[in-house]
Image (cartoon, rainbow, N blue to C red; front, side, top):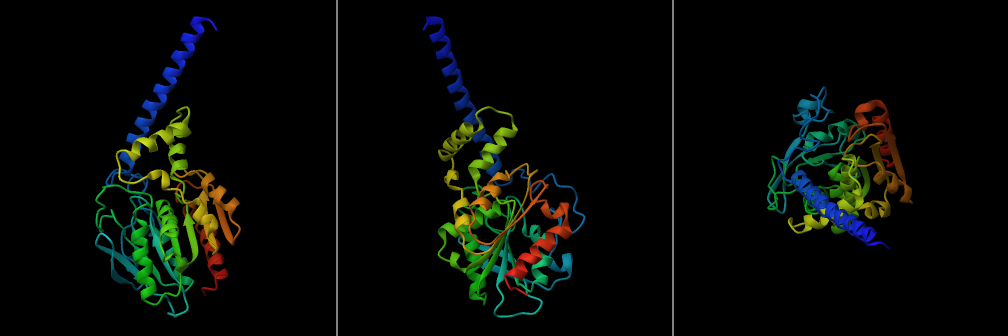
Length: 319
């Protein structure tokens, strides 16, 4: 090989390695900024003004939203008290499961309002929780959202509260990062056997795929390599290992019924993570695949969404 070719090859290798290192470092900085509590997220900024309680951004308790009677309850979490709303069933029954709603990054309890009327009509008590780093809950010492790696403990607190107060089983309902929280709960909590069914909307259950997709949207070459590099840098500056925020296996192996909605226009959580999950499921699965952006499947067709969810709940014998 001529010397000029060797030099050219060497220069290309050096430039390529430099691109990967610098690109990974910049992606890690972007990642760190996204995970910092208080940073702009899809759920705490940028939404149009809400037109109904079911729209993202609505603020108000269940009575203001729907006229539902509710109780303010306080859960004793690992970091301190966690406020929650408990909406009793229309016709209380000791045999009915409870539903627990878990919102996504930067969200709030009210995000669950697009599910609440259907859950209420199905006769379920509904517990809508705040968890660490919410504005009305304790802050995590790390100052970070951790895509379930720490937050699962707050869901565990809610599940134990429900079972201690008569819930025979739990139907957990989660959106976006809330899906990651549920996944870690399934992986790590000895209370996970209480879960009888799961309802997910655009769940962030594969953090590595999410970061790769965000880098790809920036039109940067070698996005999967940059994503791995970003996670490597991140592990050296934050106290959680975000590469472990992948819980597709837990949902694939969950033997109870699962309802999953996701839009193919999702600009945050790539839909292929949900497609892959559904392909791997060997148990009862209802997949509502829509054209929506992130957590907007209800918005694009409320009637279709509510009918699908209602039919799913009916198969559980909740009525």
